[in-house]
Length: 377
Image 1 (tube, helix red, strand yellow):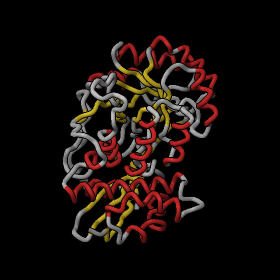
Image 2 (cartoon, rainbow, N blue to C red; image 1 turned 180 degrees about the horizontal axis):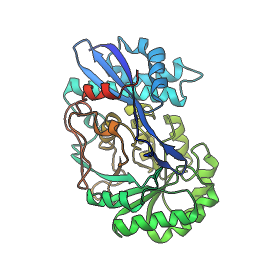
Image 3 (cartoon, rainbow, N blue to C red; image 1 turned 60 degrees about the horizontal axis):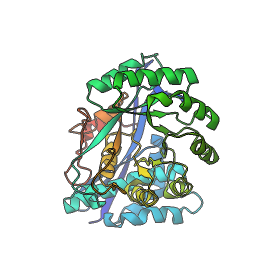
Image 4 (cartoon, rainbow, N blue to C red; image 1 turned 90 degrees about the horizontal axis):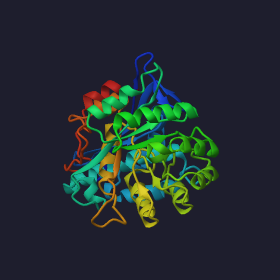
C-alpha cells in the first residue's frame, strides 16, 4: 500500500451575527479547521484533522509535507514525527507544523485500520472498549448574553452526568456561574472549571477558595500555557487537580508538564499534539508518572472521532479492576456544524454514554458533499 495523493482541505463556518461563543480570553465568531485526505494506490481513503488556522495549515501541508507523504507506506506513520523534528530542524517542533503533522498522522492511522480491518483504538493497544463517559463542555461566554442556566439545563436534558464550564472573568462571576451549574447538575455530577489561562496564580487561588464548597473535579488552564512557573505556583496554592494541554503541541512540551508534576491531568488535542503517534507517546509518559490523560476536544467530527479512538486506548493505570472514577471525555456543546454535519452518521453523546466506533480505522464515513459546503478554497 502506497499513498498516491494528499489533499489539505480548509473548512470554515461563520456563526450568525451576534452568535459568538468563547471564554474569558475572548469570543469566536467562526469555527474552522483543516481536513487531510490521503488516497492510496488501492483506492483506500484515510481522513485526519489539523486543528489550526485553516488556509495557513493547508498551505503548510502542501508546501512542507506533500512531497514527502506521496509514495509513503502508511505503516511508516510513526517515523513522521521524527522526520518533522529532524528535517525541519529550526521549526519542526513549532505549533503550526505539529498541527499539520497531526492531520497527516491521524489519516495514516485511519488507513492502517482500514487495511487490517481493525478500529484504531485496538491498533494503539486498547482493549475491546465499547463506550466511554462524555462530559458536556458548555456554558461558554456568549456574545448575546445567554442566560448561563440554559446550556446546563440542556446538558442535563441530553443526559450528561458531568460538565465543564467557562469561568475566569472575575471572582463574583466565577461563583455565580459555578453555583448555577452545580444547582442544575446536582450534587453527584462531576463539575470542572476552565479559566482558559486568564488569571495569575494568586487570582486562581482566590477564585478556587471561593469555589471550594462546590466540589470541583479539576481546574483547567488556570494560567497561560507558556507560564510554566505559574503552573508550579498554582500547584502549591490549590488543592484541586490541575489539567492542561490543549495549547501544548508536541511530546517535549508535555514531557516538561509531566516531569515537573505541574499538572495532574494532561489533555492532548489529536489535531494539535502531533496526532495519534505523539498522543500515544504522551500517554505513555503520563501513565508512567501516574498522571491522568483526558483528551481535549473542540474539533470537527474527524478530530472528535480520532479523540474517541485515542481515549478508548488509554490504560487505566494504576487501576487494574476497580476504577474509582470514569475517564471523562470532552464533548463540545457549542454551535459547530463542522462537528455535526461532516459525517454520514453523526456521533451522538446524549444519554450519558458515548459509543466507541468498532468499524475499521476511525470508524467514520465522511460526507464529502458536506465537506464541499464548508470548504474555503
